Length: 267
Ligand code: 5IU
Image (tube, rainbow, N blue to C red; front, side, top):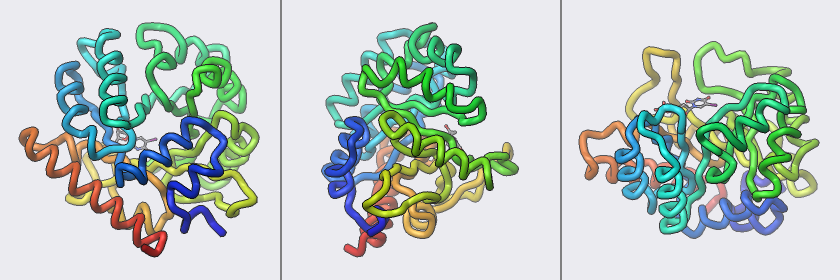
């Protein structure tokens, strides 16, 4: 059978990547397939919002290079919150250079991403060397990688053969690549194949998009119609007027994502 109709727990049992296994397990345990993208620029706001969101999310998505007052204390605090609330951290770095360069960008520099981020992602555009370079740093630390198979933005060039070739690249690197950032469940041959996770940004209940090319779909469209696994919501959650409303919105998206999952697996 397709992984599409299996529970996250069933899928955790047959997944060989420690990070993917942990993620699938905590999703069923916490009843959430919601990831929130905290795209705010002050350390204190990130920490405050992450603590509020903790119970509602399976993955906290960061853009660490937009933080104005970044220091290592921020990521140490996020790691503690991740333990307290049981979520994974996903630095949405979108690596896109040759293997040797991304190795340095992932391991070192100001952000030392590999030291705190469970999951990161990469564009397949440079070819397989990008995975090899990131893997050298990430695999010994039990990290995992997502490949960007598709994007939510208008006019994205990641489509057609490019997307299909991305899947093939992932299939050759299943020790480290646990899935995709994409808009559709493109590859799923059931239990004789690799179970990839599909994480999907471009999710909103109130609006259809923004003025810079973002396009939104609903949790139902993403999870049931397109067969993806995790909804990624940014402004739809953190763009609330106060902390109470952030909490309300997180619960609203969590429930929408979870109900869609239950519908998909027929429960
Ligand atoms: N993001 C996208 N689309 C993509 C990819 C990443 O929106 O295809 I790959 C990121 C950008 C932002 C978050 O951090 O996901 C979505 O935020 P909003 O829900 O605020 O649009």
